[in-house]
Length: 311
Image (cartoon, rainbow, N blue to C red):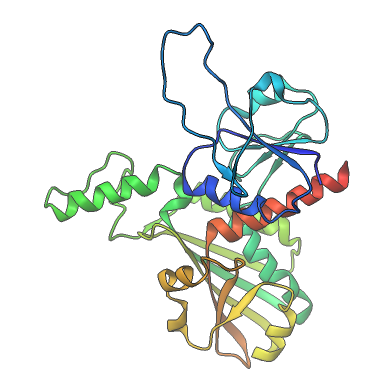
């Protein structure tokens, strides 16, 4: 593992909370954690109320400035906000871990987490290649939280406006976001599809993708129509996906997003999966997941392990 991990751009929101929860699953002995903040100059006449450092393992995190960050390969900075280019210019050896698949920065010291959509679909389809997988159509029903930390409160303001008869409040979204379903833009969908095909690395399998923005605040649902050259039983499918954290559901109604996420609060992040038409060549696989805890939290630990191995 890295020698020290520092959080940059921490804010009190759900995304940052997920990062801290994931880091708490690391061994207690390693590494050293810290929070980078720029403290006000001692001669400043502006008195600002400084929020206390977040708790990590029931103790406040240590706080450092950029000048106190050790510029070494063993230092990993999780970038939750701020300019990545500025951080690269500031240090020569610090590794940057960016939990944002759309950061657009390609650099040998920048490690970017793939989106939860790409990561989960690839992890489900790749074991099925050896079973004669021929095609897959993926429909992704995505929550508002994927649009950023300000999207959820904006949607709540819009709900209040609609319920008070004032119409949709378009101060964040260019369309009515609540009680609505909007297709994700063609460019973004194509970018995700290319990432899927690159990670799957199998030109013989035809994969298509439809992304829909839903009115849910949290929780992602995937509906995957997969075709095989030979009939696929439920037992065979479960055996091939046995390496994934899956809770198999017998009824589709057991995959209510709200109820499923509520039941996962204190458990290891898992995928809820229901299969329709088992025993045929064409299956419908429905997947429900917590896109923050599973997508961000699980990948974060995996990338940290990769960085540690490379040191």
